[in-house]
Image 1: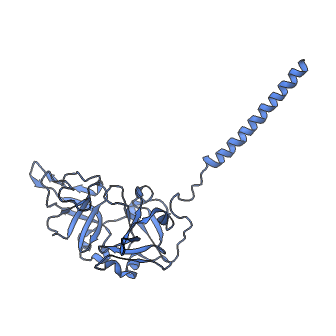
Image 2: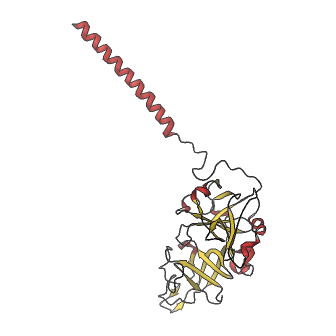
Image 3: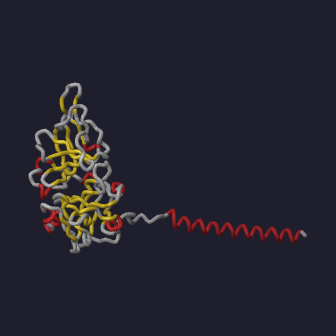
Length: 289
């Protein structure tokens, strides 16, 4: 009887040891699969892209002068060419919708993607490589844009799955290399400078009265244009009604009953022959006391 009990206990002990070894082996395999992810490649975009036939954004735009046509046009890019630049604007502040703005040291261009939350992986300062073959370039009211055909000859947003195949993230975002230029130094040349990151210094808003906000006035396309003192009607600050700062009161000193000047940074887009400055986020508004 005792021998049977001892034999049974030995079998149980052996089974427990074997089970422990199997659990340890399984846990080791799980740790290898889940606890040690491969961080050498970005989880977005097309990591297989390599630099080849990279041209500047200015050279790209010169290849397709139709972007400045009087009517909206688009054209497929059939050449095996690429551009490389840094993101200067995205949808972080709600004033830019399903677009990023890419700029190099020569020019800037809008890239339109039918995807929200682009700022999550295409942050300001992020350098990217874009393979252009198979995408379309056009002008939306003379503003150069990369995307896909929309409503006939117009240029619109490309689908997310198409975009994912055409770009590659390079390194980490670095905003220190992004420098805004003085708007007054470039405002006379729309073709070469539209889309660039600019700063307007010491401006005052025509409608500022202590009550008017960035979106007080007539809304067209869910956005409102605010004119600036001394700039005429062809330079406006354009604000989406969905922007984080939409309800912010235009700079004004209620006690002294006078307008306050401000330094405004934003993307200098164009709408035909009007400059439309798109503020990216609330911190782009610096009020001078």
